[in-house]
Image (cartoon, rainbow, N blue to C red; front, side, top):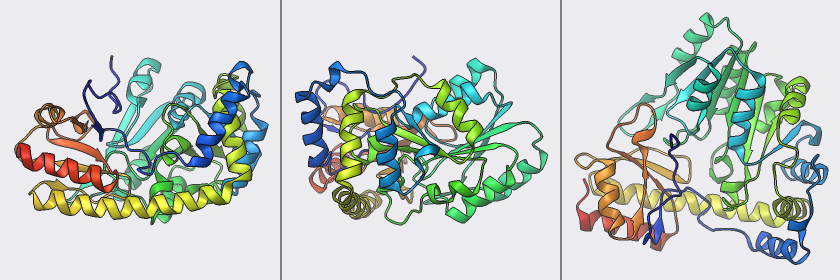
Length: 356
């Protein structure tokens, strides 16, 4: 297999730090609705393939237009649909970043231009000068892709810079993957500017925010009617299952205030625990990159990612090998931010093994 993702720990692992989800887990209101959906045997019914109720609930919750939403089987489906159905002549990616876009672009024979984030001692930054220079020379109908906050570096691109990118590539399509933005305490969403730019597509994932990786759900938002119609026609008619559709439709529409309080609490927990982990790893002499997401990128000085993972696994801990991301090294790993007890356990394991 060519794919490389977290979430596949070997047997015996108790603490999986390879998957960055909301450390508070799934909110109780959603758990009850999942159980209700099963009691009602929603699994025995087809979902509404137009997802009208779900789109209206998402629109209400996020204060956007229902008619501008395409329901997705997780945000990753949006990238696949865009490449497969919009058929760009060129793919421009800000990397390192998450996704299977490289393999898909290869299969579809779409050329790729990669723009690397600029690396500093303890952070990454978007190289806006490189982006501006590239934009001057691009004549092809391109698709520009980046995640914000970035996965795996955790860097966040301010909304003004996002607007600059959208304007620089006004004749192309810009996709901003915001899978982790709701778990960022000081991040603004591009959803609120999407209606101003016809070439902007925003991807959102409910999987990460509400810790339901087994129930794939996300959405794409755009003000471009042509693009909207193409992508909606390209997706499978029933791409999101009946249980997820039922539970999220009810929760977002009727229990929205509870979920918003849950998100605010989650942001605070993520920021607090991330600061704790940054301090702990820094004291061990490990290079820690500034992050705005529920994960942290680390760079070991002496121990490779594969060596560290092998050693940590013996203690029932699993982290994400980040060496598979473009521009990162064999010494990079990504660790999810969890609750205090688990985070302490991870840092203590680093001490025991002597990972540097």
